[in-house]
Structure formats: structure tokens, C-alpha cells
Image (tube, rainbow, N blue to C red; front, side, top):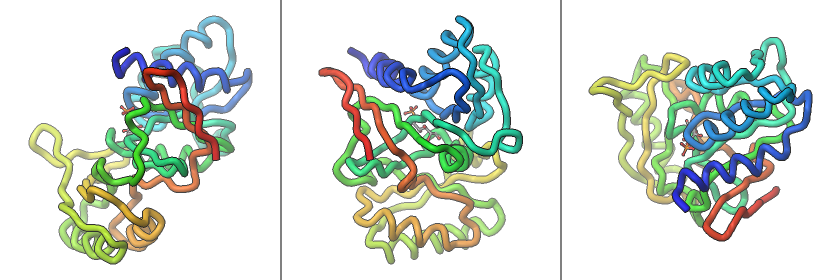
Length: 230
Ligand SMILES: O=C[C@H](O)[C@H](O)[C@H](O)COP(=O)(O)O
């Protein structure tokens, strides 16, 4: 089975958790897109839920799929968020932001009673960090912020290049109007320490370490779905 089919299987498993009337956070990325697609099919068959998209891209997809949408201002507390991840470990600590949506994703996950991760099984790792950690930063003072990030990494026992994410030769601009710095760390021995260090830097808006947010994960592999719960 190809990776895309596995992503769809994980999305289908998470769909079974959705109950009528739920307030749902809708994730971003190729795996979350399967969930939105499957949810749209259910909605068009008469199922009623309301969704909060975590990116402009998901907003467009969900609207086209016929899913009723709201905002966190109208609906500040959600029942369930279903989202993908770039990496996760057995304690459901995640790296997210490969699609540059980490800020809204974290706000939405934090507003949800449950966050469920959907992914192909290859995303599960023993130690986080092979996937470069996305860090969303304010454009003002970029180089100064980058140096502070390097110091915070070293203090947390890791090291690696921190580079500006580009799109079409220019700095990629997130939905919130910020830039993304990607930290190629290889391994993150103490994600909690690194998260604390990064959050203390004024120019850092948010980082892609999602710690203590996910309650469950559905991981689709060749031999079926593995469910991890916390
Ligand atoms: O910013 C993007 C998100 O964090 C995605 O959920 C993450 O990158 C996983 O995306 P995909 O399902 O495409 O691998």
C-alpha cells in the first residue's frame, strides 16, 4: 500500500471518533486533507458538525467540501482536533509545521478537549529531531532571533543549522504574516527543555514542538492501524 493510502486509512480511523454536533479542529497537510475529504462526504450525507480550519488552505478545502465553518471567537472551545504530524514519539510528543501551519494548529489543538494525530507509521520515531524543527518568528530582528535560537538549542543539548524557509526564492510568509526558521537538529534529547528555551525568546512566535497536546494517534502501517493513547 502506498503512503497516501496509509494516510487515508489513518484519517478514516479518526473519523470514527466524530459524533454529530461536534466542534472540530481541522488540521493542515496531506494527511489532514484526507480527513477533511472524508468528513465532507459524511456532511454531504447529512451529518452535522462545525469545523475550525487551522490554515487558509484547509479553510478553502473544508468550505468546498460543504463543512459548516466557524471561528475560535464564535466557538472558543472545541471537542476534537484531528491533525497530521511530521514526527511523533511513543509519548505523543510531536514535531509539526512542515506545512508552515504550526501556529494556528497549536492554538486550535490547545482549544480542544482532545487532539488526535493521524499519520503513516513511518512518522513514529524513538527520538524526535530527524525532521527539522519549524520555528515561527517575527520578521523584525530575524538574525538576532536566529542567534538566540542557536543559543537556546545549545543550552538544551542540541545543535544544528537554523535556516530561513524559502518559497519561490523568497522568505515563506505564514498565514499569520511571519517567517519560518527550520532547525536541523538530528536529535532532540530533551524536547521540554528546548520548548521552554524557545518560548522565552521575544522574536519567536511559536515552535513546532507539540508537547502534552495530543491524546491519541492513529498510525497506519502495512499491517494495519496502531493506536497510541496517553
Ligand atoms: O504545518 C503543517 C502541519 O503541521 C502538518 O500537519 C504536518 O506538516 C504533516 O503534514 P503531512 O500530513 O502532509 O505529512
